Image (cartoon, rainbow, N blue to C red; front, side):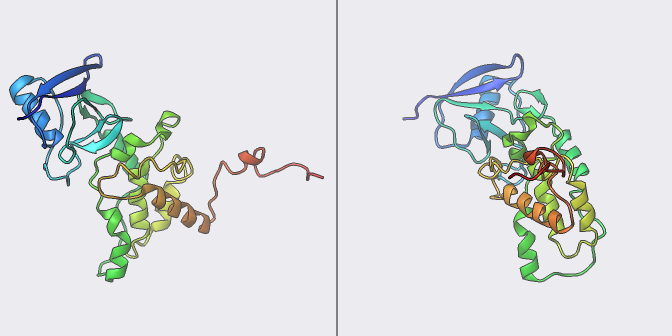
Length: 239
């Protein structure tokens, strides 16, 4: 016997939380929402694409944690809401233009790259970061946006590391320069972005590596002097 399951969805009208009761079990959240839309409430709005966990378009938050609707299996009482740090268009659909803007700011793409093959070992170094599906779960989980809405963010920064770490890129120094402001030094390294990534990418680790690379190129944390009283002048010696 299939038990009745209650799913709560944060709608964009107020925003308000609306409850739906469905007789489904052992199915994905996307299946539940499709059932609600076709059988109960055709006004419910959400986004999805591949239904296979590779397009990233169905990212939402369930009980305060980012998931993909096509992979997550809901339980009774779950609350579904749109991802954070983006403008809600309607219900669970959000505007992704800010994410594209951060990508552009960080120069998170291939440019001035050499033709030719790389070894299996070299390809393995950038394999994980190349698996990003653009779901924006890491952006949603990041707490830095509460104090700095211009923060480039984990998604773009981990992509920068992918290209900086690619031996075919001939101008990786320019990418390092692009992430100095509102970038790698603004990250708190809290690690909130790591567990929500459906591809097991660790932006925290990539940002740490970008900091090390930046230091090798002569850059430094602009906040380092502040912790010692401001600037590079540390005052009189202590006796």
